[in-house]
Length: 213
Image (cartoon, rainbow, N blue to C red):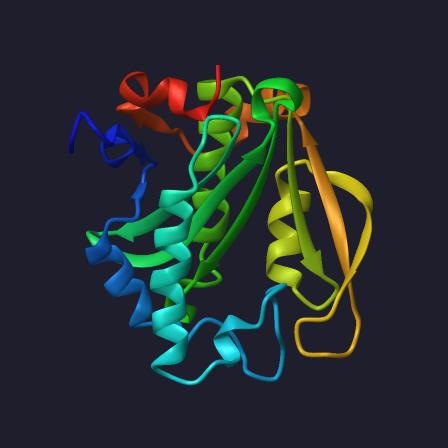
């Protein structure tokens, strides 16, 4: 942790998980499972980075996460969290916003290595960043999106109370694919908060202003 970059001291803890802003050691860990995130027959991501061969795929991950750090501004930021289970990095959960002080809206994205899929970890890691957004930083809305064949992501959004919010057409592999948008209102989050895992937020005071006044 450092006073010059207090974001590295931010921690989100749930009953099973710890989330922290990705240091380089966690980027290395993430690179170890980028080829094991989904069935190669489908593409759940808007950018088909998992189709890249190694080492281009891993080099791209470093460039992406370093760019996320370097471009951080209070009005426009992306928090890329390493998701750690029993001390092992098993996924990435992002929370991003543009013009946050004015619009109070965030968007989430995530991936999880296949060995941990299907046991509620995807829900728990999204709950962690939603708690940061709504309870820690006063967001009004959270958005997410998922292709029609990405049932796991769609299930998490519906379970947490997101509502349909239109569609987008993407082309991660060339042919067009429909992505459904989902939106969660802060009031709906508050009314169902006791259904979801507890979240402890540590180190927020030192970097509160980094997320926008």
